[in-house]
Amino acid sequence: MPYIQRDASGHISAIFRNPPDGPSELVPAAHPDVLHFLEASGEQLSDEDRRHLLASLDNAMIRVVEDLVDVLIRKQVIMLTDLPIHAQRKVMARRETRDRLLGQSGFMPHEPDDIL
Image (tube, rainbow, N blue to C red; front, side, top):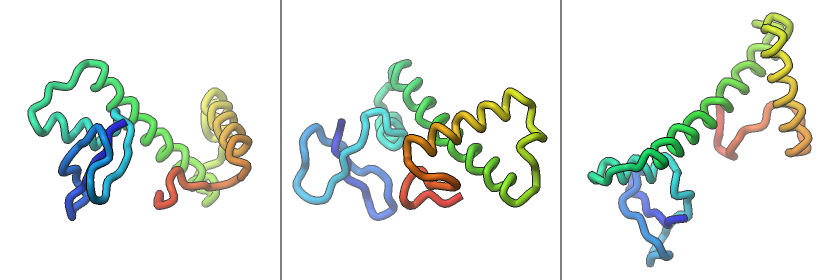
């Protein structure tokens, strides 16, 4: 996992193998910001790196959709039973698994600063 430094606007300004002097952040090598930085600097991303980037973005989007469904149900805009049975099962299985793993129920942000 590389260490990164960010500029004042929050964009990556440097990547290091070892902890640099000054503030830095340890992130996964497939973190979207790392891959965008490498691509913008002219580095050619491998097909595997591109798949990691897409998977990372997909996981983030899945969380957004899951939270959106929860909000719509909670606000009674839709009912769980409005969804096809297979979608209902997936929503319930994911909700139950997340609740069990995290020991909480209801809306819980993925990251401390996640707000839908």
